[in-house]
Length: 102
Length: 511
Image (tube, rainbow over all chains, first blue to last red; front, side, top):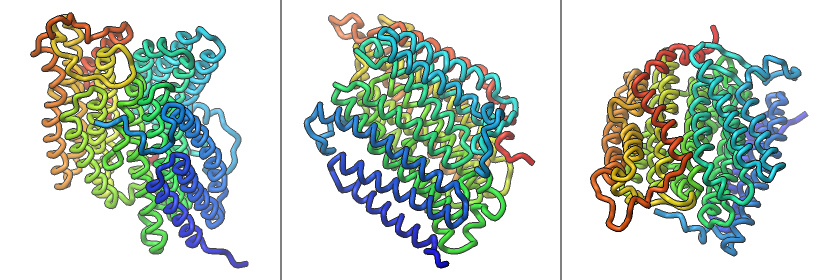
């Protein structure tokens, strides 16, 4: 049987990670930025699962499950904060958040 | 992490510190939400948890014991005890300091104490993590409560903004960190740092294997350093730090400023030395550049800050830079093949402990400069403090000269141990970094001594009778406790430094 080599998975994951990071840096809407972070976390899960297969080691797959839970935790807290900020400012644009400076 | 053993009793012994903090944290969360008047009670429950953890650490420190658990994913050794001790001290004093803030809250005061205890449990996970993934989840257990605590005053614009900024930067740095861990797992086939250090999996051997493996391993290592650098606010990953410190309620900032920094530098130290020691010649120079930038940018940023919390935020950045010196020295020694590198552990522990006392004291002083814990306070409110509040002025002076590192203070011994850990490596470029660090300490005297000058050399402005200083009982207690700690460490540094050998030895892999 033929396998896709680990290198290909890592390259795809690196591409996903870069897209996420680029999106995080260029978008100004907090919700979209959170989505980009999710993309970055997902790329890590992909590497874990692919590497677990390549090393015939189950730990990587377990870690990927944990990562999914973690992503949910961060989004839960993140959305709660976004709602609180929206109540105060009527906007979720990061450029409006410039009260803290010095 | 091999095999699927059912949890052994010895595993539970290894995670004792985490268990204590989680149990007390959950108890205080529960009490806080069940009883309307439970604020005081949940604060006490958390405080007891901190005291218990701190006592266990203080008793066990320097005994040379070593308990591994969960398939060697977590280790309870002297470095773990030594790193958790300052975190527990900082947690206890921050809880005390937050009593006024908790009374001002309409609801959620109990949860606040629970979150603080859970965040400390996260620091305990980081301090003893012997597996990259365990360390990562420790970082998360620490960060998520901190996001919530930074934004705890929901109606306050600044607190909101601080919380959201912290969450965005924190979650992106978590993603960077975990992607780095994933890459090093792909290259080395394990996430356990002990397994990474020996045999076929050795990080150094991976470089020789194939170009792809070596690039993956090095990029993974780089991303791990960047991810942890964000968490510890090392330059150039520090830009969130002053904003978040300024916007968060003062007791939260106090809590931020010590535990997370100490635990993150400790985790970085353990991961880099025990796990990636074979790559020390790659990462030590990189950390050298980061340390120089961190110290310099931190000190220059603090230099002209008129506001208290922001000034201490930059000062905290600089102190993380000083702590890095010990890691660099250890790395250079490791690359030379010497086992003496483990002596740097004691420098990190001592620095963390002295920093926790003096920084807590400084924040306790800042918190009494204003009527509320929200927003920032101008340092010139200190003018003429000595006239009405001689004890407060004396305490403030003690903390500030200790933060500067003037001999003979706790901060001086901390800096001395960190600098000598770096110098013991004997490399020329490390000498240069230590000289830059010494120059930086001299620069820092300007902004640390300015508040002291305000309180002694100015007279109170006419018409005002010292109203700028709003004493709180808890603030005075924290200043007194931190003052005793600073003085104790200044006069009896040997108590900790005697444990030096044991702390270092327990890090070395068992023969």
